[in-house]
Image 1 (cartoon, rainbow, N blue to C red):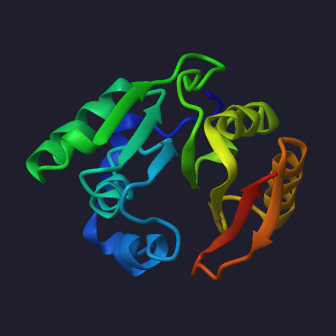
Image 2 (image 1 turned 90 degrees about the vertical axis):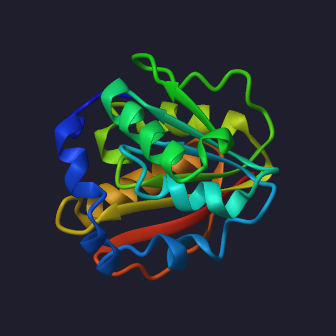
Image 3 (image 1 turned 60 degrees about the vertical axis):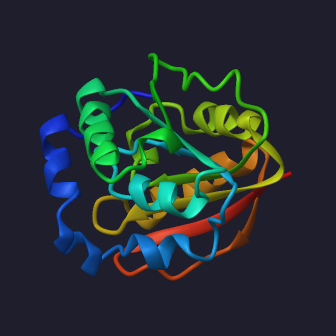
Amino acid sequence: MENHVCPWWLGYTLITPLRRLQYDPCRLLAPYIREGMTVIEPGPGMGYFTLELARRVGPGGRVIAIDVQPKMLARLMRRAEKCGLLERLDVRVAKRGALGLGDVKEADFAWVFAMLHEVPDPTGFLIDVGRALKARGGLFLAEPKGHVNSRVFEEELQAAARAGFELVGRPIVRTAMAAVLEKR
């Protein structure tokens, strides 16, 4: 899962409230995440989307947050504890080349936001995610415009198809390219 990974200290800029002007977690998550779901979030950083994911899945759901950087996850856990959401999180440190989802087989959804470009093997990564999703499980994939060009995003969508996902929608996300996919 390591390639050109965002430095842990840059994570502080990713949780600023000003970021809501670009990517409002409430608005973006609302169509996809419901109470009781199990959601996989690779690359959560310090938890910009994670806290809203945890609110939406409720006490009966869980969010599996996986990152290669323990410092990011430590900050995420402190923030979640402060909000009373820590018990809804399953926080994991990814190993080199593996997400560590072998024990997860029935997740409902995966939230992959602005991080797939950091992965050296997108197809292998998406195969790992797909194995953890139940049949017809959903995947939201987004990459920031300007940071990732449209050719690279299309290559990521091709990797998703090779990994067993079918494109079901192209939501409009300001300043990002996005797709919703479903496990075949």
